[in-house]
Each structure stands twice: as structure tokens, then as C-alpha cells.
Length: 110
Image (cartoon, rainbow, N blue to C red):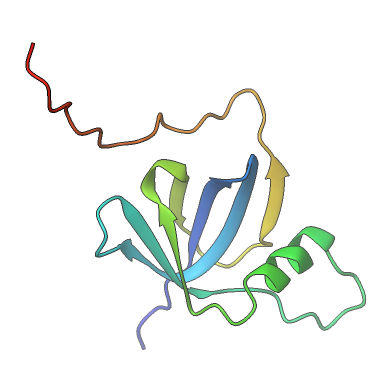
């Protein structure tokens, strides 16, 4: 039986660090974008609920695929098992790559 892949993806979205788990991660057809498919959330069987995970679950409810700008991605890891998706504040030790990645040259000659 083939092993199911689980990826942990950390990216910056509106001055927050999002940590999501997905079954599939790949480069999108649009240049400079990463695609996440099969987002994984906990199906709570206990009363304890993480508000951060619930917010993410609500935000991505019904989403089959999300496309993230490559410059917002901090890290992608293949992991043994799914953890808890969460949202954290951006700290001083994490910064996004400068954007835009591609800057067209000006039309004027010098």
C-alpha cells in the first residue's frame, strides 16, 4: 500500500503566519505560485477546540485548492503525520522575500 503524503506549509498572509497541512503541494501553472490541495483539518472528537484551527477551518471551508504566491511561502516540509493547523503573529525573525519576484525593465533607453 502506498504511503499517503502529508505536507506542512508555512506562509505569510496579511501579517500572520499560516501553517496548513495538505495532501498535495506543487508548482502552479501560473508562474510564481504554489498550489495546495487536500487541506487536512482535525475532525474533532473531543470538546477541546483550538480557536486558531477553527478559524482556518472556517476560512478554507469548501476550498478544494488554494494557490499561494511563492514569495509568501516560508517553508514546505513533508511530515510523518498531520499536526494542528494554526495562525501565528509574524515575529521579528521571519520576513518575506522582497516582492515582486519579477520586475519588468522600463521601456525607456538611457
